[in-house]
Figure 1 (cartoon, rainbow, N blue to C red):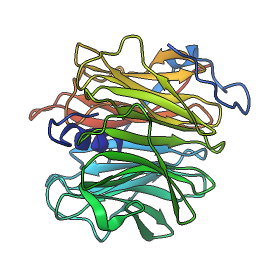
Figure 2 (figure 1 turned 180 degrees about the horizontal axis):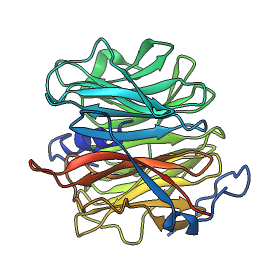
Figure 3 (figure 1 turned 180 degrees about the vertical axis):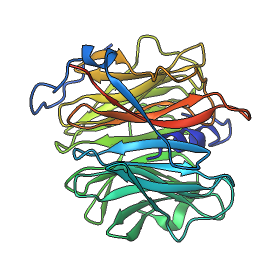
Figure 4 (figure 1 turned 45 degrees about the vertical axis):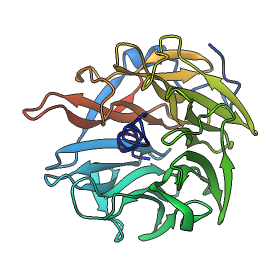
Length: 331
């Protein structure tokens, strides 16, 4: 989803307000199009919605079309699609219009079908699919028992399969995979069972490989990859082991490259790209260090050309300002 918004929700979720070395065996379609070394000499481009207070780029497809959200001067979220240098905003009609409410774009596939969340007038999150101007709400398999936090739709592949999560009345996150009207629950067996804990599914590629993270009983996050129903945990060796620390996986492409972040005991978030267990840092050179804040920064998604998108912070008069970015690797 809009991962910066997701982290904000997870930070304030539940009773305690806790957010958000192995080699992953991922089916590979071919050799990744750019070596990791290319990212050190890559080109960063800032992408900010005109007139926005904050902007984040959450997803990118293989045509280079990007999706994200911006926050206006009132503090309301608005989704957008960015293509050929042009922004096209969209807003779910069910979304609230007060600060902290609105619409967030999260993922987009090669057919232009998008997913995201809207925040209603009660502050509850609802996932959606956005296709040809029509919104379809995704509130999990039991909308009548939806928790106060709500539901999230995060990414979508070219087969229309959606990843996300929902909470029931106990406000424990349960990951899901949605396809053609049916939900399949995905819960890591190591996930905590307290409010604000549980499992969050994030990325999905066209091979059906799923990425995400779970919160343990101490509020520490652990990344995972799901290949054909087998979950493997990944913890960055530099990640902290205390509450509000740990490792998270986000988007991935068909070559198995995964975007993610870890939080160490320094409380700062560190973005990375994982290719077959080899990690390279991803950090916009214009950004400033930001700790485990309601809004965080880092890489959100990657397409098959190796282009990474996400957000970074710059200094502002009233505090850090979130800016969207794209990173094209050098050769």
